[in-house]
Image (cartoon, rainbow, N blue to C red):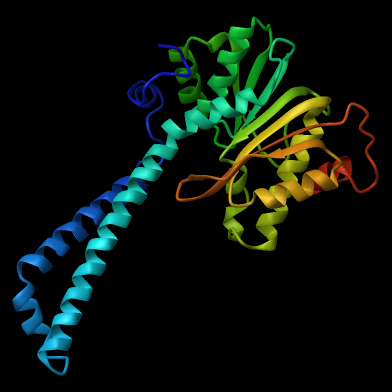
Amino acid sequence: MGKAGRDWGQIYSIYGVDDWQTPIFLLIHAIFFSILSVLFLVYFEPTCYFFQHFLPGPSAARFAAGFTGSVTALSAVCLFFAAGNIFYSAVSFHWEMAQRMVNAVSDWSSVKHALDLGCGRGILLNAVALQLKKSGSSGRVVGLHPTPTRSLSTLRTAGLEGVQEYVTCRSGDPRRLPFSDNYFDVVASAAFVHTVGKEFGQKTAAAAAERMRVLGEVVRVLKPGGIGVVWDLVHVPEYVKRLQELKMEDIRVSERVTAFMVNSHVVSFSKPSQHFVGPYEVRLDWRLNNLC
């Protein structure tokens, strides 16, 4: 079986689940509500009798008991679905999306430097490295994550995938990327940019400004003619608008896909071969960021 066609068991055995507490939390509550809905069904008549103490007449009590039991059962179904979706999105679907992102770049053989912004456990990072290896490229991919302790576990997965010679990892602030201008042929990021600035609240102007700083940094470090590919949640329309302001070319947005119980899209774009930085474009943003 090929790398792209592997089964979910192989993927989970290599990468595990990062935020496993969330699906477990949802699963426990789903089981609780399932048991509660069964108890409503088994003890329906005693439940109706209980409601009669608070409602006028037996018909109102039966309606209240039936409605409560139905809501409880529906809550259990929703919680099971949420737990399953988050568990699937975290690794298996993440791997599928990584393959789509890799396919957005037509020629990997000419790629010398690639960046995975917010590399996490290395799913996209290793997908890029596998593509470099497959194309016979001598290029390398850098995985950057804001957590310094992440590198060792990420490099371990690269070793399991057999691409450790194509991968390096380092920590850094995504709002002030520790790379020079026009350095990378490809910059990719999977389900990460939306997490930047979350300390300000996802829907605040401050958080939106932080995300736009990250996008400006992506453009800054990308070579003229280079390709950017971002898969992210919720805020994709903001990214498209910002990329248009930065005069990026060939901006494409994929169809909507549900991941982590919300809408997500892949945005791909290219940096113009002749990209002149004006007074309100990328470099001014970068300098302001470094002064903050």
